[in-house]
Length: 117
Length: 113
Picture 1: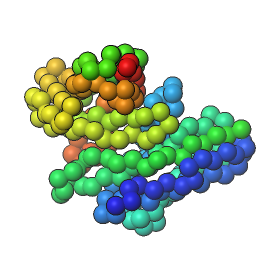
Picture 2 (picture 1 turned 180 degrees about the vertical axis):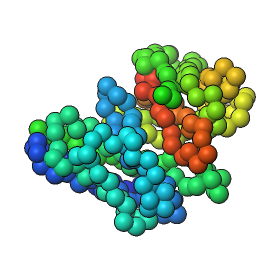
Picture 3 (picture 1 turned 30 degrees about the horizontal axis):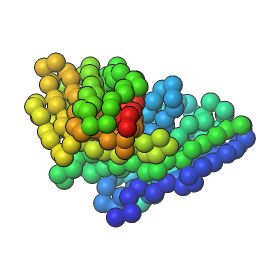
Picture 4 (picture 1 turned 30 degrees about the vertical axis):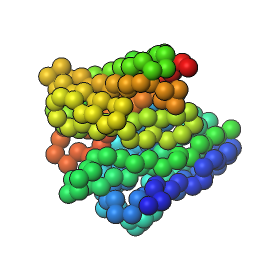
């Protein structure tokens, strides 16, 4: 299995620009999570999906952030407009539901390091 | 607010010693507990999961859970320099259908050759 795939791995942009981060979960996993990691705040859950439906977006910091999952193999996290304080590493993770042995065990992608100048 | 607390470290241990990493959580109804290892610049990697009170061993790693004390720990025996990383404790909070994990901020471990 290829694991969780994220792109791009690095993104440098200027304040005010739109940023789109992409994620492909592990095949067969029906949960997808978007996290943000900073030194100050650690690993924070932004939003998660089950069967392509957003379940909890209470961690999304503000309306500038949006996430979609149009199908089981693809999700995007968009920031528009971006600000310097959005600079962080963004991780996507996926997991399988409790019908499988490995429920709740989340597998992380390599992350996207975002720098907003 | 459901919280997961860890000592940020750094925790320094000599090669070959036992490293002991600790974690406390606030949600008494939590059911699932995980330890992730994160090397600098890399993504978190699941190394241990534990669901019931007691010890669970996997190679050099032992996870210990005490739900009454709301405490979970990770022991690393025969520590190696390659174990140097940040270790994140994660807890699945209570609530039907809750698949979220709440992460602690991690403990940085340094194994000195």
